[in-house]
Amino acid sequence: MDNYLENTWYKQLPEKLQKAIQATNIKQSAYNITSSNPKWSWFDPNGGSNGNWYYNEGTTENPKWVIYHKANIPDDAPSAYPLNYWEQSEKGYISSVYNTISRHVFLPNVEEVSNLVDLNNANKIYSFLKGTNNSLNHMWFRDSNSSSPRNAMILYCNNCSMDSGSHAVTRTWISVRPAFAVDLSKIDYIVTGTVNYK
Image 1 (tube, rainbow, N blue to C red):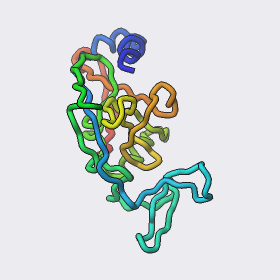
Image 2: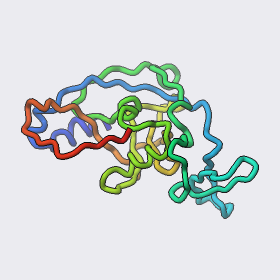
Image 3: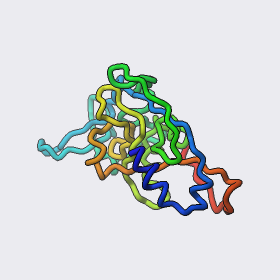
Image 4: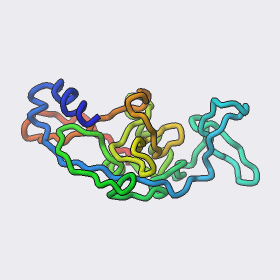
């Protein structure tokens, strides 16, 4: 993915924009899940294998499971796997050490996205993924899950949460949202609006 973004996607941008994009030093982290939120559950209410994520609008004793996109989730409610349920490490699977690399365009990491949106808050994650053009989707992070060399972290709309996924090449339903740093002194621009997810 790094090579595609740098060698293909970046080079398809207009030349003026390419010149304005600064090379950035990036590095991965690894995350390990320590718990899950019992207010969320994945299951098939018909007992089959076609499950989805549900939120409990009731209590532990009297559950009322509602599919995530129809649930009335309180404004301050945490997601299924909020950021504070994950442990971050500078080392990955079997203590592998990540190198620092330089890229013009790259996948954002968990820390960078957490500056835009509260990764502990279910509703804010859902709104962030929905975006300004009503295009709800999941998105890849560049960070890994420390349990497997094939698992990368994702932001997942179905449980309004951080999560992890494998086989990045075949998971085409997970979005790639490239990040880059622009030197505004090198381009002509007009600020037309603001977006403040957090």
